[in-house]
Length: 102
Length: 357
Ligand SMILES: Cc1cc2nc3c(=O)[nH]c(=O)nc-3n(C[C@H](O)[C@H](O)[C@H](O)COP(=O)(O)OP(=O)(O)OC[C@H]3O[C@@H](n4cnc5c(N)ncnc54)[C@H](O)[C@@H]3O)c2cc1C
Ligand code: FES
Image 1 (cartoon, rainbow over the protein chains, first blue to last red):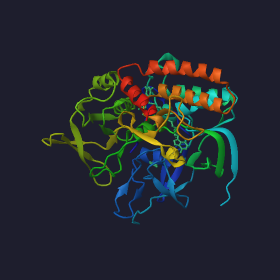
Image 2 (cartoon, protein in one colour):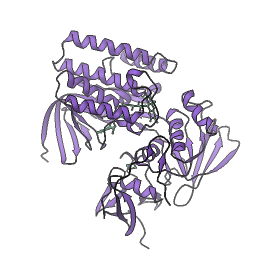
Image 3 (tube, rainbow over the protein chains, first blue to last red):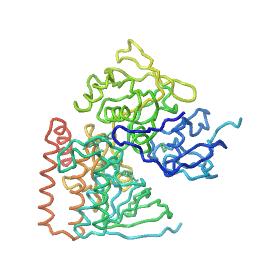
């Protein structure tokens, strides 16, 4: 799935950072340098950023400005990182908290 | 825990239009001003706005929001404001220190005066399925699409017909998403006619007297069940994104923590710090401006910011009473102009009623 806006009616060609690759639960995901992890995930249709520890239900980004913490994931081994405020870096390892290992 | 402690004349929290203008007035009077914002870019709500702004020419009407933001931020830097981004203010203690979480670590700063210009947060309601991925605030959708160039979904239902709901719907259309409808529990559209016309011209239906019954789907939103207010009919919209534009509330945690007295005004978004016409709260040296002082518009936020910056500079001894008074008069006149319209009068009455509280 590709949800990136190519040409924007007002902004024209959307400025894009250098292509990089991040790893989400071990799977490679293409991203653009400078964008937040949550936006990179949304762009490829990954909307679940964590599973509720109580109900096991999926949760996804809700505010995109660091308020709701629904987007908190484990980034390079650090737990509870708000991925809507965290810029991607080439080779970054992201894990979905509460995900059942296949 | 021993945190580094800095001092400053003035700290402005929030680099939206209010904070930027407060900083500009203060620094031009000679105040050493530190401007903090948790975003990596200055401008607050403005840099998400790709539409041309309403308001007066003086406030950048006709320009797109992000252009106004970049201009103001540039002026601030040039005038000597110390702009510190990616810096979240975590606390504002009774002793007057602010706790800041910055890339270099957490530190404290004890300024002689503080302007709280933290803006607003989006309101929310709970309904079955509201935690499903794909349900998000309209501001989140706007950030995704306008700042990062990513669609929040291909088929979107918008809840809320205020200006934010109307404008974000239009911006989603511009970016290539389909907006299947805008619903509102009220019996009339909340936003301005101009914004309604734009989405109406694109054929987006508005369903008044309707509310969300549930968001449904496994793993993420696949449909939304909507019912008419009378409890009669229910409809199912097949969508992959539900945006909530249910209004804004002033972001007042820092003021509350500092012990500022709060008042409640429905017209201004709920609880807000009591303040006078010069934007002083009841705590000495603590000012408030913009959406944090009641939800209005960017142009009003700019003028309130100026008012706070001028008064802070006067209290810090860098503007004489006469000069400060003359500047305030000019700001006051512009504010009256801005609040003169049919939408502004209710807000103005609510504002004035606070001063007497
Ligand atoms: C979709 C939409 C369309 C709009 N269109 C118009 C229009 O056409 N014309 C108009 O006049 N107005 C418009 N507005 C309203 C306008 O954007 C706001 O009224 C205005 O931005 C308020 O300015 P502000 O400076 O008070 O707050 P904001 O712009 O919200 O800025 C607050 C800043 O404070 C920062 N902050 C908050 N808490 C902290 C903390 N603890 N530490 C550090 N930083 C913090 C935030 O990150 C943010 O950058 C629109 C708003 C929206 C959402
Ligand atoms: S989406 Fe709300 S904190 Fe990241």
